[in-house]
Figure 1 (tube, rainbow over the protein chains, first blue to last red):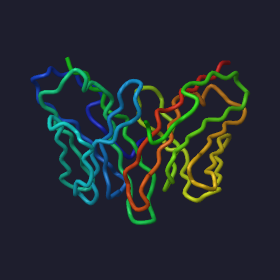
Figure 2: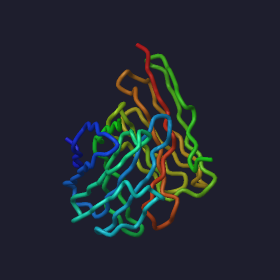
Figure 3: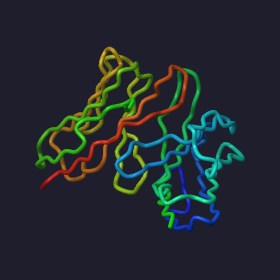
Length: 115
Length: 112
């Protein structure tokens, strides 16, 4: 059983829809992440939240909007997406501190298809 | 160019054979992580290496980090069908950061 749960597992949406991806971690970690995995491309880091504060935004288009209400929950709000945004979106969490980082623990991802 | 280069991109081995996957960077790596992924699923953590020259083993999988902390290898001994999947290396490129970047992955198939 994974300590990081993502819902939904699959999502099909039109370009004019608004949807949200949800991630919940039960590991007591203080950092959460969104990654995008497209076919034949390396995992791309999208956003990082440390102690609920966003510390990384890797030039992600504004049609992706993250939200981290507490250290256990992370959302990715989607609106007016493009077909090229179709991918596997992975959430991860870790315990982060100077000199004592834990590995990232990943959820099973949300397979997003934009039509 | 990618910050982490993995090789080979894909690999097909006969069951029982040994294999090695490499992960290379031109920069010092602060924390090197190996993950395994089944298609369409999340990443499963295998091992973490932090010190130059460090080596760790779990069952039939051994990972090493070179002294310069710029290259890591993952070695599987006597491969089995259960080893099939995508192997990814990830690394923190900053000494006190948590911005993990990943290689493109190595697809491993094991023939029975």
